[in-house]
Image 1 (cartoon, one colour):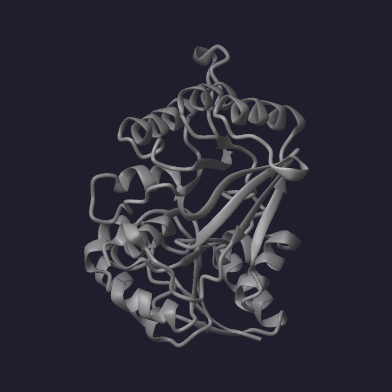
Image 2 (cartoon, rainbow, N blue to C red):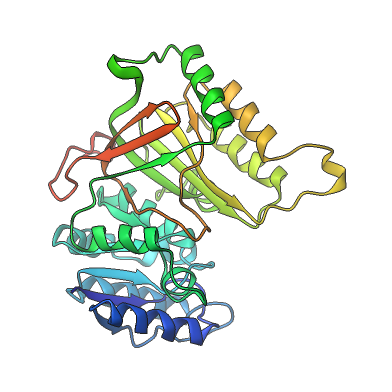
Length: 330
């Protein structure tokens, strides 16, 4: 049983039924749920005005909860980054609070990482995942449960046959060869970071963009036409961000619009081109993003990443203890 604090740092809650359903399901699972007083506030498209949402984050940090869980994403965190007390966010994380969310929440996570080196969790949101009309996905719930109880040690996933064949060709081309037992070690003690591609790219050049060298960057997005996805990836590539990593890991890219004009230009061709151009492996099929089945990822933690046949394994060091963040200048 955990104390879970629900707050709304981004978009206004429109689906009240899903909000109530999510809270009820968490209670049925045995958790004590505390709802922020402004969780259902609404100003334009936002869950309250900027000051209200900054205050909600501060209340979450001060709540003493085991988990602070966003109600939903949307848009709204980038506009309040200068007003967030990241020291309080980091202090709460150090005291054992798991900050959990995804999508627009990427802005808070990367801001916290850039400013303090704090580890936060990319994982489900209340409305999209826990309160979905259908029963929540078992794997998503299990992963969240592991995070809540401090049991999460890593995650693994299986690529499609063709994806795996292509990746192994790329790994060979990059000089990454199998070690004993055919396992290819891609990264060790690398900072895991990333999130929503549009939000990551929007932070480039700001003080809230982590300067991670030799990390593992994971990316996902929703509702973007394929050409925009390529443009955002190219922006990160031209800025030197992608080449400075040990690996780029791609999660779900969903609700992508293509038109007759594209003539076969697709996410597949975008990924193939990226993999050819980068001096680091591009690893597909991470179960994360705007998809029902999502694993939880400790953004800011040190991870090791290896590939064995069609399986990818990511393990993280015990993030509950401080480790050196060379790239944060302290």
